Length: 247
Ligand SMILES: NC(=O)C1=CN([C@@H]2O[C@H](COP(=O)(O)OP(=O)(O)OC[C@H]3O[C@@H](n4cnc5c(N)ncnc54)[C@H](OP(=O)(O)O)[C@@H]3O)[C@@H](O)[C@H]2O)C=CC1
Ligand SMILES: O=C(O)C1=N[C@H](C(=O)O)C[C@H](O)C1
Image (cartoon, rainbow, N blue to C red; front, side, top):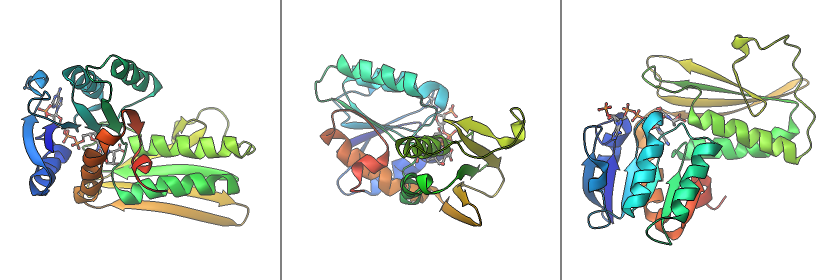
């Protein structure tokens, strides 16, 4: 499998380059950075392109790669329903019928399972809030993972017909964090940290905390390689590594 890496010199991209080089069933094809022409990536040299760039450019990159006729694995954050709809539309007009795009807010197994467990637990608690903590070089806030977890919690609570969460705060106090799909999300940026998430769940007299700590970017690599191997088996758009695990 020939894998090209877009954003190859970045913190994640450089790890992906090394992981692909070390994988016996993969061959590193092109390394693309911000000054390079993305249209050099094509089916002649690439089976899967992996994008770890920045939230502002990832949609355009994916649309270009779809037109180029290659499958895409995306780890970059910044996705919303409108952007995902544009990807689906582009895939419907793609050069190949079986073309595939896979987007994951997080490739680490601890984070994927934390999100999954949060969905199971959320209907059993009156309150749920998310705290994410990252290295201070991160551009976006809250993290893509925390946004995804907030939607997971909200969806599980809607399905279970839960009552609104108790909260007597008057007005939209910034100190209560961002509100994503009705769930409060708090973002910390601290030197020394990498990528961490806590899901706090509360009932009268009890609390449960689900926590994921990614101390090193090595934690994301098995998920990235799994996605490269699986993406071709799932034509269309797939979101979330949980879709490729037997959960
Ligand atoms: N899904 C997951 O598991 C994970 C997701 N992430 C996400 O991945 C993204 C990247 O994170 P990180 O590696 O830390 O960020 P970095 O800033 O270290 O890397 C981004 C890289 O993308 C390059 N770049 C910018 N624009 C383009 C472009 N148009 N074409 C090609 N390359 C471009 C940058 O180059 P230059 O500096 O020259 O502009 C830079 O090398 C973020 O959105 C982050 O949240 C991070 C970790 C795990
Ligand atoms: O920027 C990062 O570092 C990370 N970004 C992703 C996110 O925003 O959720 C995944 C992980 O948290 C690391």
